[in-house]
Length: 441
Image (tube, rainbow, N blue to C red; front, side):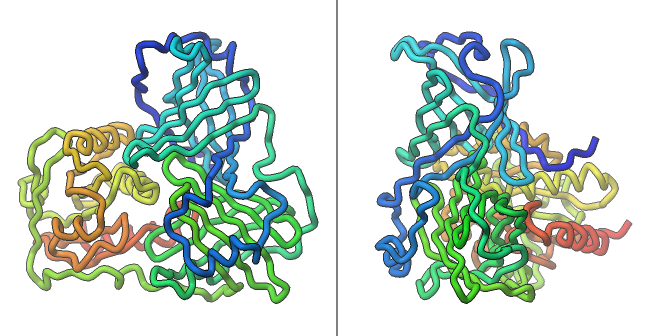
């Protein structure tokens, strides 16, 4: 059955303290719609440019919403009287979360809820009372990274109940720049779709996209958000009198930057096949890393020797990598006679090898990947590049390397245009055509 929207299913077993007594969840957590809010604290941002500081001082105000609050919607759906799952909504994407435990915490004498995102290595831990859930979203691989979280039952408006007449229709493509004038400035293309006050879309960059964004347009202001268990994105924007856009972008509680855009249907980003270069020349490349079983694996092993290969540089913590992994798995299943091999090389947030390999094992198992994921090292791009010396650098996760049957590099594709982008279908067709030429049957 083909669904009208993509569904991402997240879930494994949550391990809780022995002091949690599991009770019947349906007697405590009400079914139906909920509105969750991550309370981002802009004062905690570690990356503020001068332009952003000016905006914080009052150049732009967003009176329709509470500053720094990232909202998202979810449904509580009961399967039986005693079991339920959660559906998180971001535009066309619906994320099904099954790793949920609910019960009475003896230490606090309060009903406690844990919503786990095992692929993203994060979880929500909260107490519940009536139609309110309150606690924190916690990211395991970051040091003491906790963002306050609150949710209320029966709420279905993502940002606001207001219905101010939009100043314009934002539908179309916009040439955008994040942190303009700063050392870490980068270009993007905003893809918007507007229907009355409803706004959806994404931002494409040269290293990936900001996935499924959903929000609202209110007069000359607009708001977009996304929460997928890994990334917490909040965009606040203003429509200027000359038609340009400017605003703020928050990623969790650790990043805040200014951005601006102007309408440009001809906007283009750099060719993704030119952003990462090979240092191997015409020589074959060789690599050897540990797999999830703890054994070493090489592209020279009999299973891969003499075959064209697609090598995926990824991190299990990276949603764009997850999108690409799902695409690669689907492609292999759909084209069993494609004649290519696929190997993933992951660079993880954990330096502890045991924790990193455990994350890879969860990833392989949950996605039912038909190809192996090997542990390349830690995710720091400069450090990671030393483990794949046949690349000039690692600019983005994911990066996809195409090897011919002699394992010489013939193409390097930086980033991934995921299912939230208008270019995703073109990418899929290009991938198929190139693989067909690489490994003709």
